Image (cartoon, rainbow, N blue to C red; front, side, top):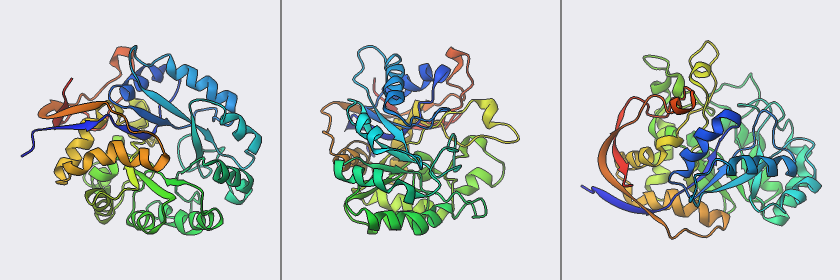
Length: 346
């Protein structure tokens, strides 16, 4: 039994840091062990301009712990009216990374999202030319579509067409959750990748809905069948090179999760590295952990690997059920109130 392993300092290629009073909690949580994080733009006022992105980057940097090498990478929120000129301005920013597509209404703060991807052809063409990645929340926005099928529907109805029209565009299908998404990414060419979250590797819809409703496991895309979870696990166990960690860590206050209309989002950042190590241990895939968290994403996006290393030890820790008390907030992390078998050697 392996009791200790060293990995390169990891990257999180999909995180929500939120804004305002949550930044003093979320930024240090991601900066704790992560080298780079791709920060989502779906704030209450979506980041649709270069100026907004630059201002948000400044806010984030105010909360990075002193001495940390943590690098937040910023994204632009795609709309039906996004302009090429605004993308060109964003490309001048040091911390700009890519463009995020939310179909209208599919998740938190997505009402300004894309209604018809055909409206975005000009900016997608520019992105293809400039090598800017498109990060896609891949779910149908049609409320008539079954919530467990919306990822599959989006792939068939929208993503396939974009892939055909822009074959050289680098696309990441975010937080994949279904066997269909796993198969699509596996069968696509070198310009198609996917992020996978800890919750979609660890749990299925029975864990969310089976005996009791677990509001802190409720996320978009929703947790699916066991066969879907197994399809994702198969990708990481084999070491498939175009899938990598994107936690989709997305905090909501406890009162906004535990009510009659709870928000979607799992706050995984505080113990993300320990949890993902636990998952890979349970899968018998610790030998694939380093590539999943520190190599595959950097290779796909063309970023250099870090030389820094982190050591993890097989040592049980208790995850608290609230990580916001220092800032008078109630935030329940993934795994809150439970014990896991790995800890980071600090």
